[in-house]
Every structure is written in structure tokens, then in C-alpha cells.
Length: 542
Image 1 (tube, rainbow, N blue to C red):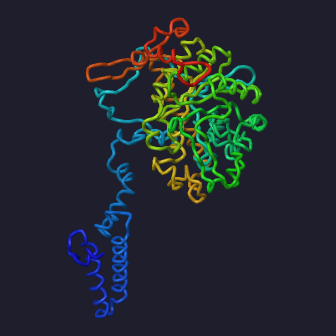
Image 2: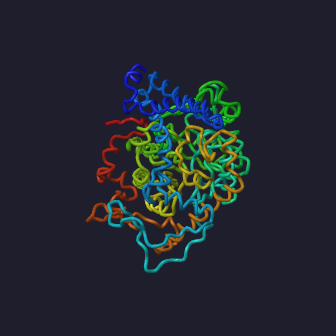
Image 3: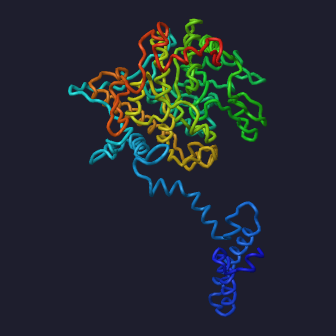
């Protein structure tokens, strides 16, 4: 403050000096020009308020820029707050936005609203740029498969489930608003596809419209949790008996923050959340980084088999983001040793991310989807069990081309989270973790989530699903194939450098059936991890 009084005309103090001068001028004029006294007095009050703000800026100790540039430095914070919106609406190109570029978001909106989704005047991609990818088409294309035929059977026996090739990926109530959950589930019911609950438990909003559910059970065992936080078999069996639940899925890790637990603070554990998750009101709700019900690969498979038995034979599997490769191979060895196989495995790519996560985890932990999926798919081929286990895949899937690439690398079906969020109104404001979602998709504020009109958004969910699968059928037909499950890595090409093009088959190693059993040393990618893996430990054995 003394610095300002000593050097009031220094440029960095100019805004505050101008406010002081104008306050004096407006006060003086209000005494002379009585006809305008009210307006001048108001202007004087405004200037004095700004002066008071400037004094506060000079005296506060948290922000250096405010101490040096009182009043005017607040513009920096305002511009910083609206920077994402300025970039998104005025400066970013069609292909530039992140995590989803504008054209990817637009295609979801257009298909969800049944608006024209065609583009004129040729691609906006530089097709000679590195990383550009394309699908080989056929001179003899096939008729497009009907949407109803694009399904996959998961599990065995009377409780086997026929799943769509595109489904709603895991997003918990709490992460999404009640109205968003309602719209998604109503759309799933109308469109004939499933809705993964996420690890937050099965809420009343998941049940309201009766859409097919996949119950995801995480390390917090929400909905099947005893008083000490462990797994309660009786509670699980009672909940899994619900006919709306078609499959049960054990979550080992998720793409946004693999290897990282979570805490819902006590203040957010409402009576409703307490009832849904089975946790005490007023206590932190902890989702540990690892499971307490098992500690070895064999134990994991025994737990999955137990989930299947307790659910009355419903398909049971697990979801993970691939980390240490020997850990997944240890699970594969445990399958061989125990004779237990899951009905399905969902591979989540590290690019998945509806949940908030530390920056280091979000950006640099976990294997990307295509790498993890190809690894898991080929590992199961290598041990001769791929035909017994279905593979789902999730991670930044919004278009038919995204689906086609993933299915070519081994997925039997795809799950999408953010794509369906766009369908119910998400605008990628990236404020999911703040409770201030502008469209109410991720906010628990009733005033905000009322923006989601459930019948309208549910219809958009159905439209997005149907039109994306229709586009997939057209892509597959153009490649001369009858069904997406006929897609293979050699159908896709990628420009590896300015003068080199490779197929996905060249980029990702392809194992032969039983190769890891017959000669694991023959595989450059798998030999070391295979040697380090044990069915009795997730750790390295070498």
C-alpha cells in the first residue's frame, strides 16, 4: 500500500489511480450538476468500490500479480476462467479440440438428433500426415447387415445374454446426475442395449425404466458390502437376483486412474448415497486401490466364478486397464491351472476418462486401448481360450470407425461413456468434478439437472446408438464383409511416417492359437512377460 501512495502514477497502478481520480471528479460534479446527481453519485460509488478492491489487492498476500497490478489483474483471472470456452467456440479447428475434437462431438449430436450427418467437399484430414488411418474397401461390397443382427452372445446356458455391439459404459450415479442416469437407462431399454452401472451401485434411477443393467462391482463392493467394507455374499446374491441385471462385472481398474483408489468425502455421503452404496452416513466412503476379497490371479478367477454362482449363473467377468503385462498373463496361467474362465473381459483404455483423476494418472498411467486390447486378445489366443471368453472394449469410442478399428483388434463389442454423455447433452465443459456442469449431466444440483428432459434425451440416446450401428454396418459392407466380427487387423492401414504405410497386423503382433503353450519364446512381445508370470502371484517371479 505504501508503494502505491509513494508512486501512484506508476503504470502498474494506473487502474487504481484512475478510479481514485474519477471518484473525486464524480463526487465534485454531483454537487454542481444537481440534475445528474443520482447518476454521478452512483458512478462515484462504483469507483470507490473499485478503489476498495484495489486496496484489498494491495494488502492481500495470496496472489503476487494482484499486489503488483491492483484491479486490472482481475482480468487475468476472468480470461483464465473463460479460456476453455473461448478456445472451443472461437479458435479451435474441426480436428483440434481435446479430448474430443469438434467434429467428433458434432457427429454424436447430429446422430442423436437425427439431423444430417454428412460432410461436403472432402476430408479435412491431411491424408499424408503421420498417424492417418483408413479402412480398405472392397470392389465387391456387401449389403449392410440389419442392426438387429449385430449382437454378440455372452455366457452359456439359460442365463446367457445377447448384447448389442454398442453399449453404455460404466458411469456411476453420483458421477452422473439422476436425470442423466434416467435418460441413459430409458434409452437402453428402448434401443435394446445394456447400461453399465459403474461401481457406485445400482440406484433407483437405474431401475426406473427397466433397461438392461450390467452391475459393476468395484473394490468398495458397493451394494454388496459388509460393515467392515468387505464383500458380503448374501447381499450380493440378493441384489444380483434382480432380473434387470443381466451380467455382473468385477472392476479391477479403470482407464482414467488405474491403480488409484477413490474417496467420496463424508460431507457428500447423503442418506440416498448411503442407502445405494451400503456405507454409513457421515463417514468417508473409500474405494480402495486393490481388492480385499482376493490377492492372487487364481483367487481373482475363483471370485469371478463365485459371482457367477451367486447370481444364479448370469455371465460374470472382469474389467481392467492393462498395466504390467505379466499380471494379465498370470491371470491367463491361472485360467489354465484352475480351469476357471470368465464369461467376458472388458479392456478399458487409459484414454477412457469420465471419472476425475490426478493429472499424472490421467496422462501417463495405463496402457492405451488398442495396445491393451491387442495384447489381451492375443494372449487368450496364445493359450487357446479365446473362443471361450468374449472381450468388450471401452475408451474414447464415439464413431463407427472407432468401433471398427477396435473390433478388428479383437473386441467382440464396444462400450462408450462420453459418447452417450454427448447424446444426453454434455458439451465437454470439463467441469464434471466441480458440481457445476452447465447442462446438468454430472451435477447433483436439482436446479442444474432439471435441464435434462428425460424423454427427449432418452430418444437421443436411442438415435445415437442406432445411427452409429447403422454407420458401422455400412463400413463393414464397404469392406466386403457381412458382419463386424469379420474385421481383422489387415483391413486397416496407418501412415507410420511420410514414406511408410503399415497395417494394424504389422503394428500389433498376431499370435497363433496355442502359441504361448507350445513355444512362448517364439513371441518377441510375450516371451519375457510370460516367463515373469505366475498363476499364484501378481508379482514378477523372475
